[in-house]
Image (cartoon, rainbow, N blue to C red; front, side, top):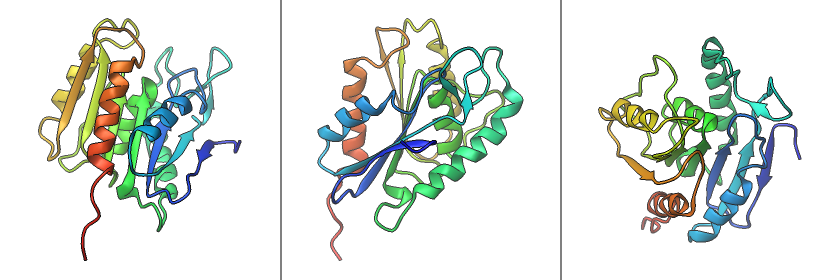
Length: 207
């Protein structure tokens, strides 16, 4: 694989799903989820799983920024770097407007911080949290938040805070809470599939 991403192109792909893994994982972690989601929608999807740029400070995985303890001062630069990487994925065949960003945990926080400023089809954040002093822009993509009510890593209250932050924006923000912990259970995946169908499986516009 390339040093910074995994890519699974699909013949005639007309949309893209970008996956952002959590703290301590790597680019391959969410690829099986991406494959399952791609099979569930009609629009052919290109899958891109981005690798976080830093080695995890306490193991062999990767991190978007130091988290234990949290290095909040590093967040702005990390977010700007991620925006640039996502922008660079856009192409004539699959523009950013046909791209959905999906992140888990720390990757979910990065999804919200970077994705709300980009012209994307939608954002999916599972077990995510808002960065300190983050303010959502008024104009942003539609958002699906998913969070376990019994999450002992990122409390469910973080999802409520995100939804509150997004309340004044111009697009929908749906929150799906499930009876589970820091995970992506089957019922959460079902909601992700619904969102992807809504955002990407749209009939072609007549000329």
